[in-house]
Amino acid sequence: MTDLYSIPLKRIDGTPATLGDYRGKVLLAVNVASKCGLTPQYESLEALYRQKSADGLEILGFPANNFLGQEPGSDAEIADFCATSYNVTFPMFAKISVVGADKHPLYDVFTEAKPEAVSAGPMRERLEKFGIPVSPEGEVLWNFEKFLISKDGQVIERFAPDVTADDPRLLAAIERELAK
Image 1 (tube, rainbow, N blue to C red):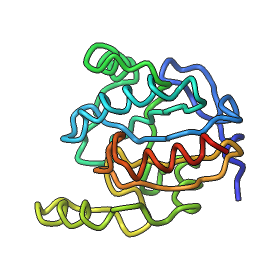
Image 2 (image 1 turned 180 degrees about the horizontal axis):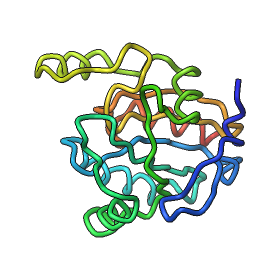
Image 3 (image 1 turned 180 degrees about the vertical axis):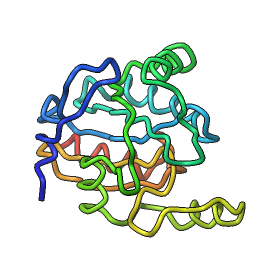
């Protein structure tokens, strides 16, 4: 399996990065979008970041335009939206693809390590009920899916898009990892 810490990334300002920049911290990677019904999750993600960053949690935003074109903007537009609409201070990265033939290698590793998300069934059913095409099992289902990564770079858990940053299941998993 590919080392998560060595996969090349770009920050939203275009500077090169890797997850190795966050080695030794607990990471919550989230594929985000500006024009989604779940976009208000930026608020609870930022609140969680402000509450837990001093304890060693990093929330990492990965804009993706894979789901009904809900992240159409440029990296600069996305950065501006996040800053002005939600006062986002957690690290944001350049727009990537999280599903399909052009899926970023980081998300290959994420989905291979954790093919199933906590509580994905209800979200999948809701999308299907509204006639929205859904990703195949094992792939990222929608915007705001969350991957929890341990201090040593292991994908520990995966949470469905509608599991919010204040959900007790997510908070308990984060606390467990921070305590290690």
